[in-house]
Amino acid sequence: MLVLSRKQTQSIKIGDDIEICILEVRGGVVKIGVTAPAEVAVHRNEVYERIQRSSETQEPVGSYTYSG
Image (cartoon, rainbow, N blue to C red; front, side):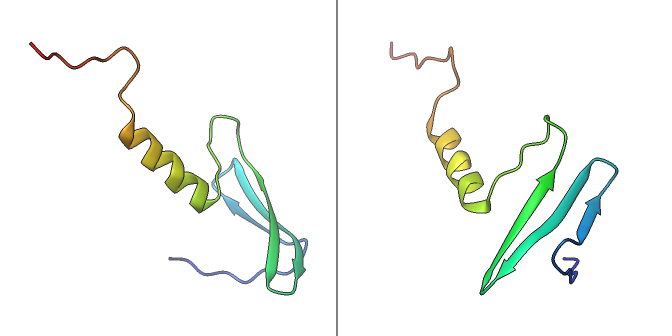
């Protein structure tokens, strides 16, 4: 894991298309902004994990179970 220190209004680039900017630091909370192409999904980790759990429990659209 790469660990970087940034101050408010400073940013980090990932490749050519993704930028992470530190918008605000207040108390123990850091507000960040992410600029990325529309085809790149950006989620908070807890949301991503919920999406993953949800997709594991659902059958793909159009699938069925043969019981015969």
